[in-house]
Amino acid sequence: MQNVTVRRSASGDESALARLAALDSASPPRGPALIAEADSRMLAALPPGAGRPIADPFEPTAELVALLELRRTQIESADTAGRPSRLRSLLRGLPSHARA
Image 1: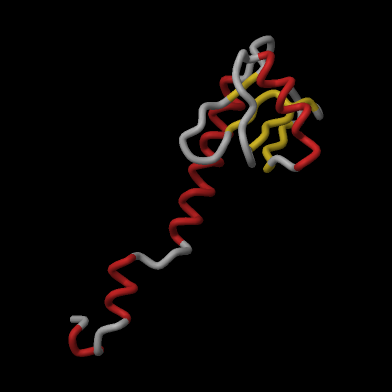
Image 2: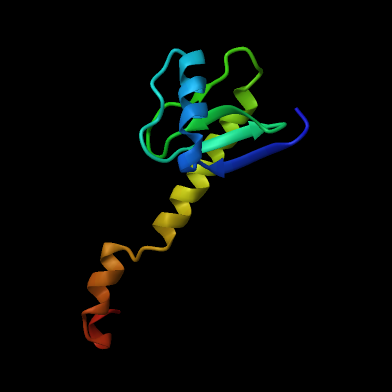
């Protein structure tokens, strides 16, 4: 594998995801997924949340799956960091002298 790309799935990826899932004896992900391509071939995919990865069993994909899991964690952390916590939201409603 020379060139690896990690990206979000697009509507045109459905047939390739179905093929990949069939190779892995799995169901294709419903909705969006992260995809790992190597040399322009889809070799692994990972749905957001707690979904299980699917990968081409005839290729060495363990490192690609680990890369997808790392990227999923980064995306989830960024999404969480951008949202104010419940405590911060509650504190904003208090007068400044009550926040200390």
